[in-house]
Length: 201
Image (tube, rainbow, N blue to C red):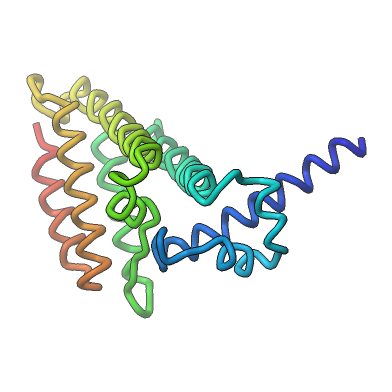
């Protein structure tokens, strides 16, 4: 029992460091964030950091999984919802994101994976590989839903779903970059309008 409680405490503290540290690193970048900033955000002694992470790079790798593992699960759940048609699932997911951003008093978007990929993918190949793994997992979730749409006649029978999924995912990354820089909903609205046209038989 005591061992289980200690393990739970260890995981809770690790998750706290990952949650707070990833927020700091998203805003300040990898190079702009030191271990000191991470532990200050988490409210723990600096020495505790190294009980959970071998280095700042190890932290970044674990933080990517911590942040995007649940997001991929939510994406898979939304695109796997049996109640709606495949086309409706995809459009509904991105329309909900538009609604989410529309509710913000001050439109802003901070992308952890985008920050790390632009800054560190070439410098630290392990981070680049993890970013690519996460992005490819997202593409494969979308591809599966598109293949269901094709099977149900919601897309042309000769549609290349792998290529279409990659195109949509790449376009979405561009939308997020525009949101971050321009703080306007227009790129997202344009994306959804074009997506509606793409997802037709």
